[in-house]
Length: 272
Image (tube, rainbow, N blue to C red):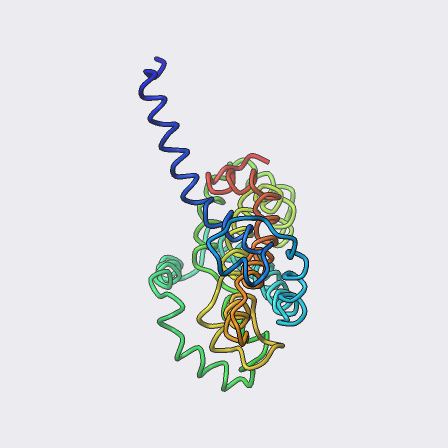
């Protein structure tokens, strides 16, 4: 049954309105990024030609490029480590029989109710005791394991047909070969979906990176954006918006590249 014309019009108006609400700030930031200081302080939305100047100031003078490099290192390392550890943990909970397996999985799920903010003081104490405070490893090690990723991999592995598992056992595949040759090829959608989530999460972290940032070598991009605002003697909103637009590009590229697998992965599908 086709929707009534009035319903279709109302739906399109609602969609256009919500799209404008979400896209509006991004468009405003993009326009302001092209403006010089005087134009950025005025209510004008005219495009100016200072985009490259503002990008250069944000990238070099305020060291946003260095901060983005730090964040790329942390995000890629955490994502790779979290994927490997969570995949192995999910496989262990599904295919291995060991004492207190249910209790262990319950404890893993329990950590989902403990946000990072609750653990900040304990995390600071541990990192300082290890001598890692103010370094990139302090931003990497605490986030290498994930209860959410372990849970999603476990749910995905439960959907793997039993015939495939039995065939691998008959073929004499050991645990690591089974993971490498069977589970990983069947899990690319889930891996890609979790990679998108992990990269965006690490890229947008602020509180712990702020506490750990004792110098440029350990500063991540979101903290760098705030410093870009604080370090200016006279606030230049064109430079700030140029920096904000720069920080959007990497995560946007990652999402667009993995968009299809991201959608399939969170449907917990085994389709390749």
